[in-house]
Length: 211
Image (cartoon, rainbow, N blue to C red; front, top):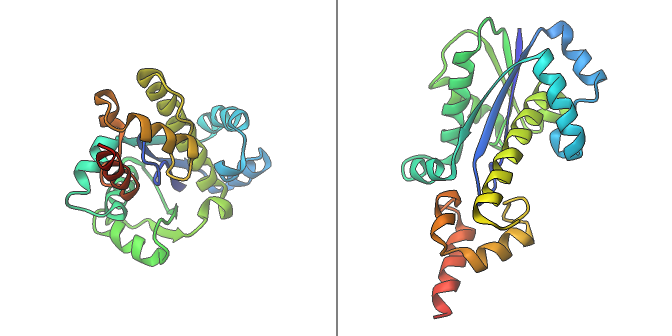
C-alpha cells in the first residue's frame, strides 16, 4: 500500500490547517489520475467536491485539523515545520500496511522534512518528501483535495459565526486583510486568528497607532 500526505491552510492567518492522508493500492493509483485528480489548487471548488466523494470511495483517508488556537500555542515552542512533521507522523501511525508514503514537503529542502518526521515515526515504510508532490503523485493530489475540501468547510462555519465573508483567510487575500483591519480586536474572532503570524502582528500595531 502507498499513501500520500498533504495539507491545506498552512499559510492562512485565519482558521485551521488540515493535514490529510490518503491510502491506496499502488495498482489503483493510475485510476486516480484518470479520474482527473490533481493538485487541489488547480481545481474549482465544485470539481474538488465531486472528486472528494470519489476519493472517499477509493482511498482510506484520515485528517487532522489543527485549529488556529492550537497553532498559536504550539508555536510558542516549535516551528510550523516541526508541528506539521508531528501531525504527519500521527497520520502515518494510524495507517496500516504502508510500504511507501509520498509527502508534499513544506521545507525547501525535502530531506530535512523527512528527518523531522523520522524523529516521530520509525516504522519501515519508505518516506519520500518532495516539493510539489501534489503535482507529481495522484495519491498526494487526492490528499490535497481531501484537506482542501474539509478546510473550506471549516472556513464557511467560521464566516457564519463571525457574520462576515472574509473570503479565503490567506494573508495574500485583500478581502481577508480588509476584514482583519476592521475586526482584529473583536472578541469572537480571536480564537480563529494565527496570533504568531507577522502579518497579524503588524496589523495589530497599526490598529494601536490609530488611537
